[in-house]
Image 1: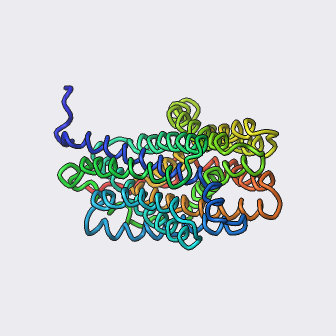
Image 2: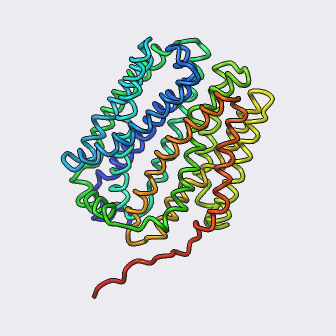
Image 3: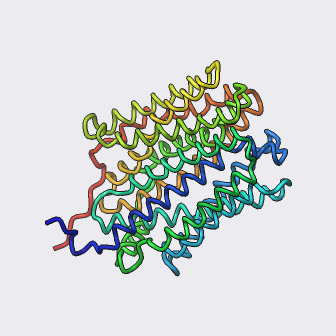
Length: 400
């Protein structure tokens, strides 16, 4: 039959498409912020020593926002939270480009961090609910949409720098366009009528206790991968401008190349795992990511640095999705709980990555600073055996 199964309401497809658009919009907004860090630093007179403090505060507050949103979701639902916080994130982005004092930047980035944490949590909660209703994996597609948004945001930032638009115009225009789109998209999010008990079932599964010890190697791999990701997000553009003397519009291509590689890698990654297995793919990805860091660190010019970060994107994209997949294989009966715990190390990676690279760069140079995440991503190599398809713990036997 060509018709959808009766358990999948017709509105579910519209909800899936709307959530994909939501991920794309968030990728665009996030990329605009991180690729304009040099402009933000210049506008507010932020020193290189103080910059890592501001950058580190964002993931800390995002963690707080994620926890708060979890409580709000229990009262109002993931759809309601997402419909409010996504337009608000756009307003926080605009605020970051309008001020001229450090306290104004602190307030804008603080609001951005809190709202992004709530946005990330509610988007993924809604995605998990949709995946439960579909009965198959669709989450990678949402994150691919985020990568596509990152490409769009980095391209817009490059154009803004090329034409010297300035942060008030660039961020303000982006917010004026994206915020209404977010409001319109929110009308089509899946709700209780479409999801039924899927969200409640997913939340109940995530609340079940799973032991930490079998997950720790995967947690470390996740943290190392996101330290690498945070290094690129927060410092690739700054490295090209300050370290390699690149024009600001050209420097934006470092993040753009990284996100293009991430998108292409995620499009091809499942086939590579099916053909070669998870362990070889993760090992190759870690080695390729380290090679990308090394190439960027020794780059003699901007284009060589962009090429290094692009190679890095191809490597990292293979690691992060496989961490979640491996956690699900470890605990097939409690995969949502395992994934929820692993996702915490997303924030750990961002919290460690920004101050680490910033502190080393402040003490020496960005070339030396890039070697720290390179060594950490190499530490994924001995952890790769934990990505084996063979689960170390099976599901509890069924009763009856």
